[in-house]
Image (cartoon, rainbow, N blue to C red):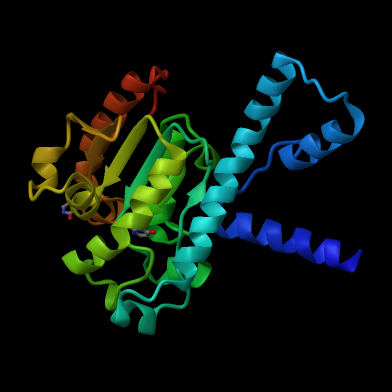
Length: 249
Ligand code: URA
Ligand code: URA
């Protein structure tokens, strides 16, 4: 019994490290195990479909958890490994329609192990709320999973070494929309050197997702007059998502 409890705790911990904040009411593996014991060997097509649909959320959560465990062991960037408290994988809904991409963890994120929990994160939360969305329904990650010393901008080599993890997460979540926050996110995701001023205000395509680029919340904290541009970008995004645009922005 203690073993079982420990195994369950480890499994949940893995999911948490994978950024999973919610589980389906009936865990699919348990549902499937129950079905195997109590049902005849021929399962109806509907039942198979329902079981598959039910198991999908958990599969993504498990895939993210496995990738997060790999990220936690990553030692590709000497300087970052030496300076980090922990890796910062990502957080949110494995089935998110919208993923926000930031730059790299800062001091707060390095301590908490979660992206966008500091001052910039508070503003991002306000932006998400102004869009009529909840932080739990989107997914949030960064170009880098380790904090650069003194919050310096990620080096191109570091972004390159972390890219398989970024693409891995996006490939599991398969969002319809991606919002790049700031030049670092936009340039690294889209592999361009265009300025954020030129990248914002239009859509790009990335692996089947529509990408919007806007200013980084930390930039908006220093330049509040640019907030109206970010609100324009978010409205453009919400229209494409078929969402109502809340009155106050
Ligand atoms: N800034 C970022 O780009 N990412 C974070 O996670 C926090 C601040
Ligand atoms: N420069 C950046 O790197 N990001 C912004 O959001 C704005 C200017």
